[in-house]
Length: 635
Image 1: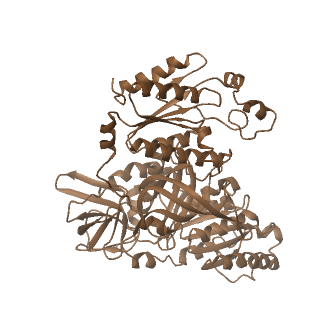
Image 2: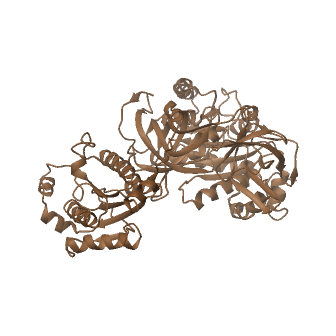
């Protein structure tokens, strides 16, 4: 029977089962725009295999059934993973192709060469065993060639092929090929790429793609497909490493069975092995190892498995089952390399979601140590990361996660950052190590807690967050509300933007990055004061939704009341109590909110008040009545 898929003679399941024992090579094609990636993939698919795209939907439909049994063929693993990304709204645009030959099966990630789509290349390379980096023989090594080569090295892709394409357009010139290879190899060696091969070819004509070219007799190596079929796919390092099973889902079809399923990211596992479930650190023992439809004596890295444990431990999606003797590390602060993928620059302190394995937590970049020049490798000082920039940063999470350094395990050391508002992928990174201070800092508990302090004051702590344009009336409203709370015998305190910039935040300016840090500090202070039992009123422009979302997320059970002081810009500018709008209009005050810096209005605030239409006393009374209705202030 042919290695090709023929839907007229077999089902998808039969085809996958027939190819199950063949080794799988995952590779990526990359390089600069118009270097011939699509032509090359088309040639490979047409000459040697099949396009599997029409069957992806059917495989995705069946993947749930495969998953409940703890075993999914390699293609189903790929499709299921992409489906999970789509469920969470994560934007990853990579075209995957599946094809097979008599010797091996392949999944190739086809990514665009345009600079703005570098994130697609990172996505495809993150799971690749090999990278095919194309170069147009006429143009040679370009900036995007260097960027992709550097990313291949950063992402730990173990093998790289330099495909010098369009040799037909340089008359099959050996000297031209040799010059390009010399330039690229110097870069590859400086980056520590371990295994490199260079092949001259013409994807359009087919030379050295499937079979050896008669027009380049000076080349004595293998054509590309034969190299892809015969190159080593070394699972040894992962299989020899310690056990790592990121739990993707928990199977509990009945009261007698509770299995933890996922793709083994490292090591081997057998019944009776001692394990530890992280980040909680609970110990247990493996009771059963299930692959496919039944129990097996052993499973190895790269297989989809379901484990049952001897104890009823707290283990859910996102936890990591590890070797008890060689567990992963647990921390909440790291150094990492970050590839920035968002058109909006990275601002330190801005909140994101971080996804590592199947676990999602809150995160922010604390500092940017430096960026890397993609051409020279030079380290450059930076305060932000622009689109496609590569930087070394420190990262802070809102809770500990289990991890390995990326150099040890790509699956447990790689992560993505997700925009909290759009759920688009904003960055991808590789963890280097935990910051020492994160392992030496522990929360200290005290007998007098928030509840005891609130009971003493006879109120529920809360943060009333007033946001709006300059001149909207935030400080006036905060003052009126504080007076009413004081008259009612409530303990309240106002945090005012201008006042804090005379002390705590006097070192900050008004750039977007400084505004983010300003609100981060205010949120932390407000949380501490509310933890003391107070009702805290904040009066800040706080122009960005993501920072207000961060403030809300940091409250840890404290009531957070977002009040949009929704006064029209024309009214606020007409008031101009501090003369700031006039300065901004004259160009004397850059980065002024509402003029040349954006204000992102709340989408669903608890209260909205237009001080141009509602007297301040009435507005303050309305906020107070709302607090009483919620039980924050006793009636």
